[in-house]
Image (tube, each protein chain N blue to C red):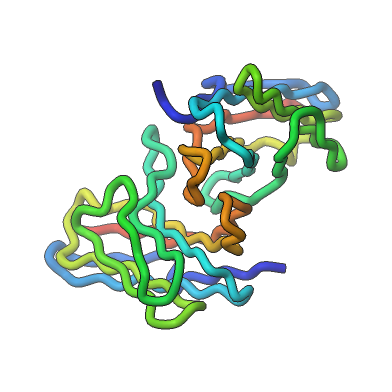
Length: 112
Length: 114
């Protein structure tokens, strides 16, 4: 089993819709979870971090964490064409690790 | 804001050359990382450093070495470049609070080995 798995995509949503991205991880003891956005040809940019069960909102982005089910999701509300990018989920491979394992990414296209 | 810079955006080298990629961060971060990113393979960790002169191998260290003589600077060295090292190389830094924390990436170096 891969350490971090994301829904493969690509995901195409109309402008104004909600884009929903999912990520599952293998180590039940993981404590920190991150979402990065990567535009084509650019480096990853941190957009959300979440450490506790539940929801965390930041503008149009909401991260949801469920440690019992070992998944973390990212919702993008009111999607804009500028949200078109690849979204990477990152989780430590082991609970006491300070490295991160990255998912393969989900490419989102927002149709105007 | 955290700023991570990399010495070159684009680099073309010949097979067998020794290649140096340099990364500098300005936030006094403890941990620094070198990744490569290839289509279909995602981000893969090459090496990381958790303190000056301290380093650990990541998932794909073969053919690479690193140097961290100062806290703000982390260098990746390709001892003898090969065509299969053509890739996007990304450096990241992290504050090092003890648990995995937010990593901040530099702009990347796209290396082509011919």
